[in-house]
Image (tube, rainbow, N blue to C red):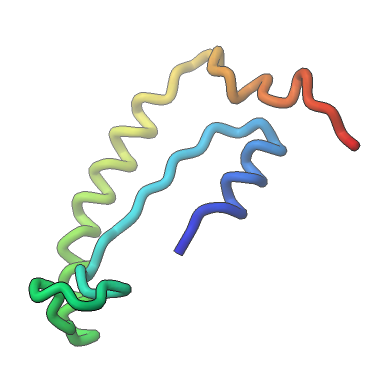
Length: 84
């Protein structure tokens, strides 16, 4: 999956954004790789559950790191934009 739509909308609203992906299996979209073994839905859910705790920790650290004042370039990303 891509984040294209979300990124475009965030830019339009001058929002800061970051993509966080939870990789659950290696074989998706990989043909001919001997290391890419098919996985079951159960295995995907187990991996997702393992990653959930790490994701929670990451999000909590990110929220705590948000500065009180916003001086990033995202806040004025469209200042000189031309709308056709």
